[in-house]
Amino acid sequence: MCPGYEFSYDSLNLEIFGRKPENMLIGNSLNCYAGFSTNESVRFNSSSGGLITQILIFALEKGIIDGALVIKMNKDKPLEPEPFIARTKEEIIEAAQSKYCPVPANVAVKQIIDSNPNEKFAVVGLPCHINGIRKAQQINKKLKNNIVFCLGILCNHTPNFLATDLFLQRYNVKKEDIIKIDYRGNGWPGFMRIETTKSTLKISLGKYWWFIGSHFFYPKSCLTCSDGFCELSDASFGDAWLPEYSHDNKGTSVVVTRTEKMSQLLCDMKNELELIKIDDNRITQSQMGMLYFKKKSLNARLKFISNSSKSQEVLNPDLIDYILSIYVCFTVLISSNPIIRKMLAKVPLRVMWLYKLPYSIIVNSINSKNMWKKN
Ligand SMILES: Cc1cc2nc3c(=O)[nH]c(=O)nc-3n(C[C@H](O)[C@H](O)[C@H](O)COP(=O)(O)OP(=O)(O)OC[C@H]3O[C@@H](n4cnc5c(N)ncnc54)[C@H](O)[C@@H]3O)c2cc1C
Image 1 (cartoon, rainbow, N blue to C red):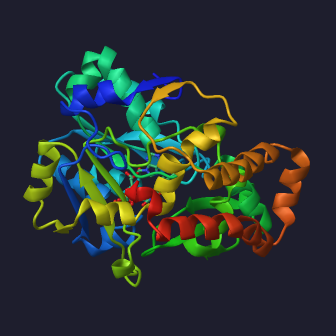
Image 2: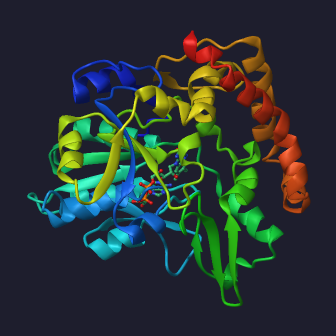
């Protein structure tokens, strides 16, 4: 079922939404919103606006679902993500926030397959998770009938485990001392919070993202992915990286709904959610860096790495995209070298920042001119 081996976006779009993708950047859509949960605590303790957590709680309380496939960090092994079926409000809240490490969401799918025939579920996942679920639904009736909706998470890439390991080393945190790790939460854009037997560290997203977001920690499969908006989910959720929300320290999400049942569910949540309709252009504007990576420079990267059969329409790359792709592929390639890994644990964050700076400046300038989007 792994979507990394073979995947047809057109046929799955036809099967799920009855039409091929209308918008090459975000896929099929019905409505776009920006908003947040009206529950201050849910909003503050989630990744952005707390919408995913709030929708799951509502669906559970209204009997729309009996459980949701979500991810928490394992209590005994706090650095390991644990996919599970949350069946209570408390469990859904416990699973809130983004986990910036590889997550084997498929291990909990078996619990849905083995569940009572009348039970209904929601699934939360990254594009690669949801695409795998969609393929599995094609051959497994229980998954098709019993999963009532899939909530997708916008995704640029998932950092590998090395990112967290080296980050802990640089802060002199021993893995065995860790009691709990939160990658997001505590308002927006939030903090990484590392609770150890000795102390609690709180590191702002801005600070650790230069490290964890560095191309040194990109899994190879993320280099071949063209789906940043989780285009086969019933609704997709991301951070509202827009100027009008940049001073909001509580958190706002952007949402794309793709199915009537999801649009209706959001309408029914008038008391639980604060949502405003926005243009799909504003949604793409909030994700220009990610869209450049997925839709504009993908084919340039694929010239340098082998790829399996995935068919999704993307834009043709220009010379500058090839140059930037050489930088990205070279960085991913050398990151597997043990000497480079040792160096990464030691180099000052400023050096890491400087290494990525030319790439960021060029991509920002390409995006600010909006040239590729107009083509
Ligand atoms: C690896 C990764 C990359 C991302 N990249 C982008 C991006 O490029 N642009 C952008 O705008 N937003 C990105 N996000 C999404 C963003 O961080 C928030 O998850 C999103 O805005 C939803 O916020 P929320 O407050 O509604 O979610 P919450 O209410 O906090 O709920 C989050 C839900 O997602 C589940 N979850 C968390 N991490 C994972 C995971 N790794 N795999 C599967 N399920 C998970 C949790 O169990 C929880 O149910 C990314 C998230 C992740 C995990």
